[in-house]
Length: 165
Ligand code: SF4
Image 1 (spheres, rainbow, N blue to C red):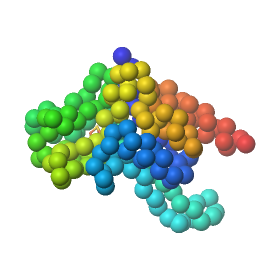
Image 2 (spheres, protein in one colour; image 1 turned 60 degrees about the vertical axis):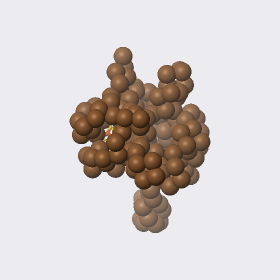
Image 3 (cartoon, rainbow, N blue to C red; image 1 turned 90 degrees about the horizontal axis):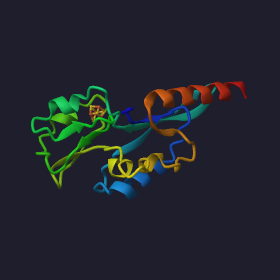
Image 4 (cartoon, protein in one colour; image 1 turned 120 degrees about the vertical axis):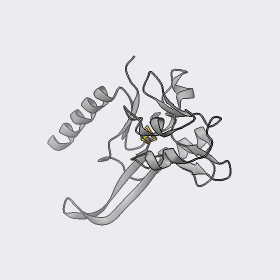
């Protein structure tokens, strides 16, 4: 099976946060917890003019996830299709995974005492759908879901075209 992942073309992100809203609607994390998170840097000089640079922070569904290794109760698993899942029913709230994630992609819900992260909407993927944030809701079309190698090729082609326009 080819792996699934989420890839963001950060060059195109305009910081609108539509993906954050789509994720909240689909997964309903507690208020204040974001499973996908936009941060902004700026204003600063970008290509000769003052602008903001946006970064989309979300689980990278790592090939060899340190969070999986770190979880003593095996609440985090990597599926054959590449999706890394936290089973919240199994989570003890020890928060070791939060320290181990190099992408700061795991949040902690203090009321429920549970770690939470993007599970790549696997409930949708298993129904043949794409994750809510990648379901054509991004006005900048910067969120891709699918095979990482194919996505990289598409992004490279689009960047080439932008540079020639
Ligand atoms: Fe990798 Fe962090 Fe996602 Fe675990 S939570 S798969 S360490 S990005």
